[in-house]
Length: 387
Image (tube, rainbow, N blue to C red):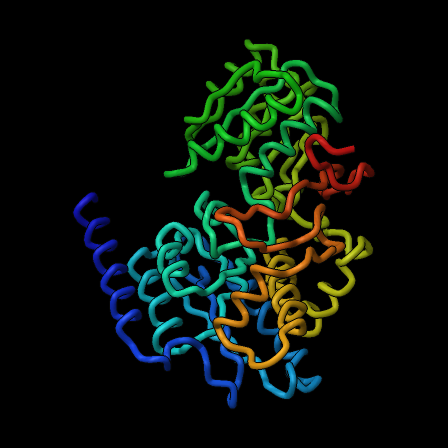
């Protein structure tokens, strides 16, 4: 594994050197043709988000149909990395060197940020992911996702459990993906700093098999609320068997699907944190535009497709502020100097900015499984530490 990773890094480094050695044709500086924009998405493989590049393209098609940006059309090039590190690295190099894209917009890869963060920095190109997954998406100078991400979401979930639901004994039972441990710890520490509280129980080594042992552990600890990010069906069925009807279970955004709402037993309380306005209610602010685009293009309605629309919208808004030629250099400068943009589908304004780390979107709205469907709760966006 270590040899393979070193080999992968070597490949990426070689690609960066090759980029540095090329002439001025690699700077996205052609101002006579289309504005080329790239993305790295999981269309196949273990982390599949095919609806994301479809949503991004739908927004750009809308812009192109209206005449483009200063008469120039946007050409969108999405690369499928299939959650394969080598393919993700090669995709970034190809988009930057061969396609001469001015930016990456709407990426939704589980491995892109960690592998390509140095490539983006070294080539002075920005990435605006629709779905930031790993910690590197939020701790890199040239990457700023339009979603809160799993770690800010954890802080919001903990805050909701302790401050909105009013629980003293908040517990966490999490399946931890490789490389996510530090991000989880940071999220917990942020919640502790805001509330002055501590977890009654923490288990971040939960397996995906029979959940009985974990639920027994939570019951013995007297947990009033349990954060959980694994498979919903077996977990809630066993919670019913264990007689845990008085516990509030709060699941992560990955569990916010119609299918999961359908399998929750009627007397088990399950809440889900969302990163954007809950997509199951199209009357919520911002969802009307998203639903119109998604419906018109027959794209699957998911929370991730919301991120695709938002990322594309943010890019277009910033492009409109550029005076003069639209190149990689001018796009990067515009994002680093942009003013915050309020977008109704999220809890805080989006801004890229000049810093070394970017996690501009914070907060979560919460839904509850009721009668086999998700019911949107009335509190609005919960942004920890802010009233």
